[in-house]
Length: 248
Length: 250
Ligand SMILES: Nc1ncnc2c1ncn2[C@@H]1O[C@H](COP(=O)(O)OP(=O)(O)O)[C@@H](O)[C@H]1O
Ligand SMILES: [Mg+2]
Image (cartoon, rainbow over all chains, first blue to last red; front, side):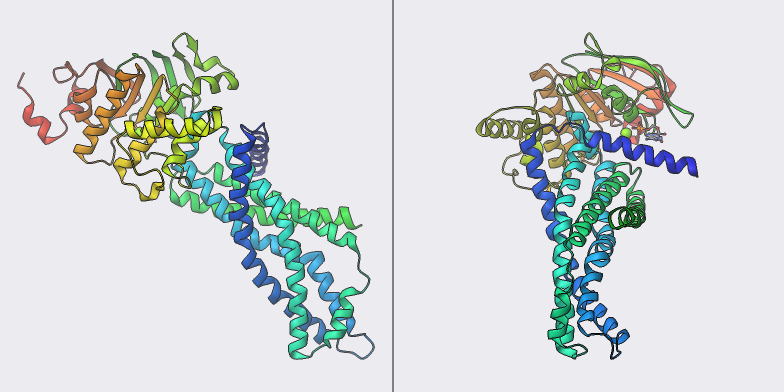
């Protein structure tokens, strides 16, 4: 069990070694990165926007209900919503959602290429298939996920503002005042660093499970499930490590 | 010429190839035949280095392929073309992109030059007006044609075909077989074909190697296979009712 676990990790690093060996032709890679940006990045905007606006609204409601005491200034609700979005939700939770969406699609795409011998065909041409297929996905993810994160923060707080305007649980003016309260730019940097790391984890771990898929479509489905589980857990572990390391 | 010497390959302790030695000749269509599971695909993947062997050596001309480092392997790979059983076209690329990928990656030719070469290869396999289509929009026969075009785009000296006519009707099978044989002679390629189709054997079997349970059981050409005195080969050759009807009593 433990031996198998460390064997997997060893194979993961071997594959990464192959992925990061010198690319064949820069021009081809740039084109592939653009294609992946579209698939991995643009394709995730809508889902990220939807969950962000809902969570922003819900967090604001929760805060308003729980801070319903005379002593606490209402602006704290806006402040708490902002901090929740920046520190945890827009990076970690969004990353977990994307691990499901992007991770499963990467693993099944590469897994299908493996079992239909498309990867063999690339290797036979003399192409470094790992680098050709996986590197553009990693680069696209690491560049694009931080944008999704910023977008999620903005949309989430907008969701909070909207719910306060609609329900009146907090005065919209107070909410806005809270958004400006004690703003720390380091927390943005921190969350963007986290998101870039999460992007690397999700794209590379899912590619790893796809790349070593064997057998038939059932196996591809299984490796895609494994990819989501493994990348989610790795994201959570690294969330702990990075928070400890960057904030304390 | 390709020479395999004493190739041994096991999976989880089970011998799949047992001491196979065989030579494939230049300018000829060399067939590896045998039942499903007899080890044809594994042998071919060992020949091209997609699977490591447990023992034995593969020679391409005077080069010992098994002893090259990965940079040298890459150089030999550019002289190889392979047609995989399912075609193995890249699903997310069009026909044209599939065929031109090796040109994009490994040559510095101009756009116009590459386009000419792609068109030439597609014309050679009699596939015009399909450049913009995706693999999912092609029929089985068309997929095989694109795969052939992609395999020959770099002017290979060695061509490998794994069951090139599996899943095709008898007429299309014959067309694909003859196409491969023509290309082999035209460019003087060393061609190795895996097949279990007796029609292919009789049509293009310049040299035929019969694999049985991972061993080389018989070797010859299409001219002597019908009269060979080998019970396992006989079972294979005369497996279909149509073939049995043509069998001459000894
Ligand atoms: N990657 C693999 N892992 C384990 N066993 C394999 C693998 N590839 C092939 N085999 C086994 O090797 C034997 C020969 O397979 P193959 O060469 O594909 O047969 P065929 O002659 O039909 O092409 C089969 O019994 C198959 O189960
Ligand atoms: Mg086979």
